[in-house]
Length: 285
Image (cartoon, rainbow, N blue to C red; front, top):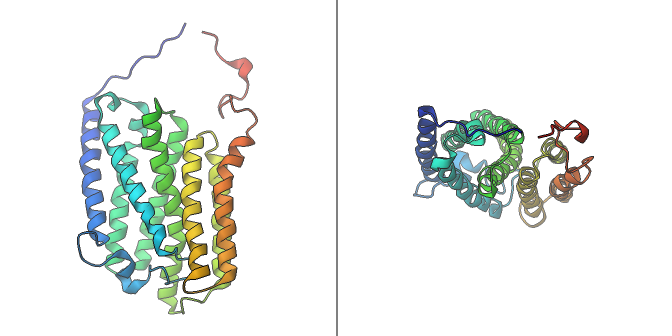
């Protein structure tokens, strides 16, 4: 009969917990300040309005950005849960806590460089942010959550963050390109449709990679569908008006929403994990 030993809490665990908790508060306050929550220039007005809802064909409409309220609340939940004494030696928190903190720092850095008007540098930063969140997602697939609270604090948080950031990256790249080329906001329908199609394909790839962690996959898909849906709304009702982009964004949103459920449903056997393909090989206690 096998037994599972509880990992021993170390001084490094305590340092990690408090550093992540304090760092999360500082990073979120910095992000709120940089976004204009405490006065100053709102992010949509920074860099000459390059990231405003009407700046490019793939800019989400203004209501889309309310998703940050959910993301920040989820990140605060993560910071609190990982600080609990019982989570000090938790394998999942050990695997992802530093990376989640890094993502929050990168978000604050992104806001800073946008406020400075350095759009091409902001592309590099947001690409790094998405890469870091991809690492976190991959690590979450390797270490199961101990309970529903940890599941919510990690998978829902990272899923919302990753999904939105993936869509925001396309808007960021397009805004930087428009600024660099000096083209009109309504220019580039073909590019916009191609970019949105690529995001739709990416949502399927993510759903397939995360199919063994369905909560994470669904949260990511929902956030991507949210961003894409508001791009469609912006092109249908706002400016610049473009029906081709509206349809492309709408279809991509539908794919992003459905992909996690389809990927989960089409698994060979819901009871068998990705590293355990043959139930006959299970260890007998």
